[in-house]
Length: 230
Length: 285
View 1 (cartoon, rainbow over the protein chains, first blue to last red):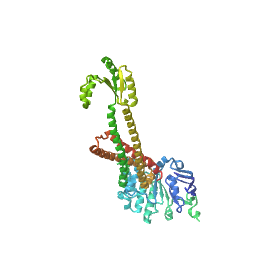
View 2 (tube, rainbow over the protein chains, first blue to last red; view 1 turned 60 degrees about the vertical axis):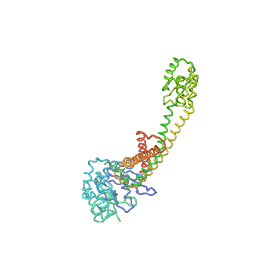
View 3 (cartoon, each protein chain N blue to C red; view 1 turned 135 degrees about the horizontal axis):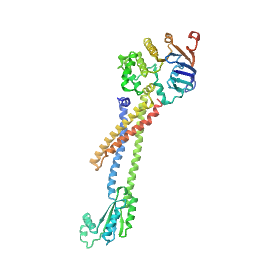
View 4 (cartoon, each protein chain N blue to C red; view 1 turned 90 degrees about the horizontal axis):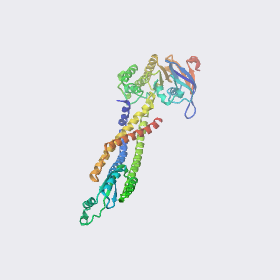
């Protein structure tokens, strides 16, 4: 599903953001991507959704060879992915419903089908009642749920979440995390970058840890964490 | 409503001042083109009136038998350049002179003999009314044995020709210059719109919008501004035309086709200006 093979990524001003990173994430998996800020978590995700070019190595994402992807094929790759950020990235002048519908409209979905699909995902994230609210009228947790609904509405095979709980209080964090677990339980792979170790410890999911651009720990191949960490 | 249409209309709501400014500048540019166009249209009409009067007169030797003249008249009318050839007898030449030259009526009245020669007046078809063709036909007329002399307004024809050329050249130069200005203005407003909406564009990209899809509303927006500018320019030109008509000279306005062409030209300018700008700036967002 997502396969990195000896991936290097250079910073534009010199230095390496990723050093020889290899891993394979299977269909339907839930994976934590951990590490300090600047360790390369976001860079890994950006390579997955082709926001940055791969310097060397191979990146494969659900059948796409990302390193050799033509620019005009990038949108096709992204339609298979759902992406969620720490800062939500909602359009302020549109309601929750419109924000979600937007993701369908830009892909040229049939208009007749849009309303029903939007309501379905808003219900899934528990926000059906606030479909008409604008982002500023919603709490942080609710805004992130709208963003998740938007990521889900195209029925992606993978949901990429870059610090999705970074801006949320504890209660909202728990809610959003549970939502991501539910989504994963229904078959969608989830890759969640986070430095919230409490969250990581709560669930029995695979952990990939980065340190200064290098993959230092992968619970799928290395020994249990307690033995690996000093 | 279609997303592309909705997106392009949003720009007008979000930046009404900027939109109004770009429509106004396009309108002004096209208005200047329109004013020139009006001059051109009226000049063209005037030229056509003048051109209609371009004729070649072949004066005939006295005593030429009427049969030869009738035959020659038919021959001349068969020239591909010739629209009509008319015989004017000595008597009718005199009658015409009396009617036209009122001041000399007395002199003409008292003539013992008619001093005016008979002639054949030749009128050319519109597309042959230029120096080269006039010369050619004149030469051929001289070939008839009974033709004494051939006259035509050579200088006049040449000047007319040159004026027409200058009018066309100035039209193209001024039109092109203002089109370039309008394109730059539209390009700038699109640039601002792209930068203003960079966040939105980034989100569109994230959810898998193609570049064509992102570009479309900007193109439509440019086209709409160009079209509105064209319409305003037509309105302004009409105002100017009304004033000129009332205070200066009898003029004519654009035909319906010409008006449509100006609005179409504005639309094209808007479309081209935004197309040139949007691709360049989308790459940077």
